[in-house]
Length: 267
Ligand code: SAH
Image (cartoon, rainbow, N blue to C red; front, side):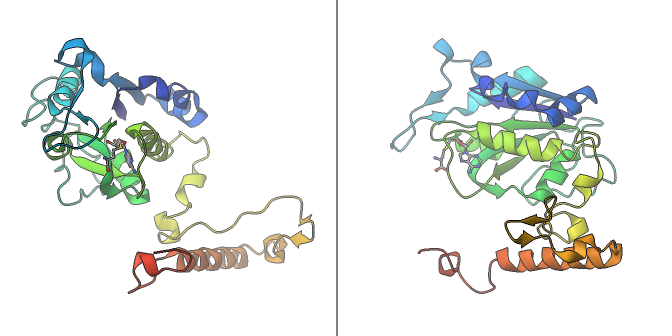
């Protein structure tokens, strides 16, 4: 898989690429590159942003700047169907990958271009799996007030948020997406079974994972559940699934209750 991250701060990713699963993925032939949005700006003096129409605080990253960066990287016209964004043989999701774009996202066969934005579709395990099945993924990191809306509408295939809070830039969000996607690439983790049965995976019917314990058996009087020492794999399995379901029930939003009314939240 080829991942390109478009950012004004490529240096943010230097540490990230030293991490073992990322290095493993690179050794397996995947690529992860960082493209400086400022390097290809068509504006003078490295300008990439401008004041917002309609007034207000902050600067907005210009659509023509993002377009120029995508075109420099992929060629063609980034805003119309062409080599930039359009169908390219072999660039779609792997056949049979089960990737089913959400309404409004890329039709099958297009390069996946994800703009990071607080207000986008919330990133989850299913989307990580969908992106991991792509051959090419571009991540667009915003800064300041974010991107001109036309980046979301005409250059990106997806607008993705990593949660309902605001970061100062898309770099951490892109790292979150890269991390979750890369650990799904076969061979990246080094021990495959650990990705199959994890929180939110189909193997656990989308529920959080069950608890894990290791030595010491007795820590300050808090003992490991006896069942885990029983050697009875079927009963251990049953116990684990039950704990996973309990966690799902505890963390699921309650039906019919608004977010603000949930216990532990102040309105
Ligand atoms: N004015 C925007 C916030 C801009 S923050 C708003 O109110 O929504 C600057 C950039 O940080 C964004 O363009 C986006 O790329 C990134 N960002 C901030 N919070 C994010 C989140 N929760 N998920 C993904 N990206 C985020």
